[in-house]
Image (tube, rainbow, N blue to C red; front, top):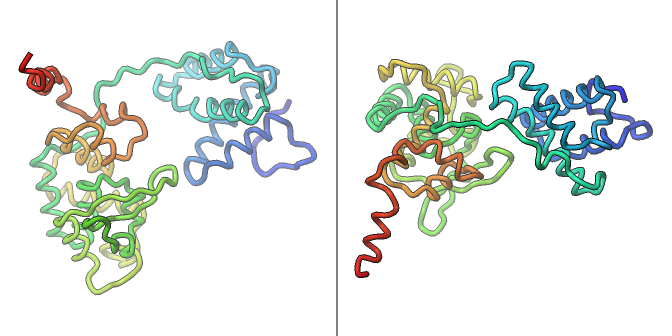
Length: 304
């Protein structure tokens, strides 16, 4: 089998079962995720071709683990090896679901263990976040709205750039809400608190529709690069002496929510994390014995 330089487009008359499975799997994704997963599958197909293996039929767990070892031998960090396996594992999982293979050879393949106690992103503590929000509003109303979307509602850079005026016009059960489409094209609805609404309304001005945050110079809708530049400008003006990115603000929103005592499940909803273990990485105080569950349980059953 020759390794395809691309998995799309293809000729239906000549496509192999392995390629069909790849095309079917990749059709589930779009944008950057599609690009990333296409790259990961091309790497898998190339390795199989070099080792005279069909990329789907006849693959066993040992082959998958040899590929994982190959990735490590290339000098990739353990976390990068795990990332490179996302598409490969999904590819086999759905090929099994679709009946193209009788068993999933990747389901029990051993991945490198990653020991991470905390997210490595440089966030902001409570006072730094307060200063960041205050300074942002003093630059332009667009900087202010962006800062609140990132630092309070924990939006990602692409999500904040995509917010439209119409997206926060609705009221649900007495709360003004923001509708957005998040990572993986998952829709989400979150409350807009009064300080955030004030910042958004100041940014909106007399406009009634269209993109909310506009570039401070161009007056055109911002993109992700503009968001990074605006955040860097706010951080510099606020005197924060380290690199601050849009994700630093999202990180700050999650860590400060946990520091404020927001339960892990509610912080997970704020962050829109599929796995609570991801949210746990942001909990800076989870080793604090004052917050240990035995205190609450003891108080609950203190009568015994």
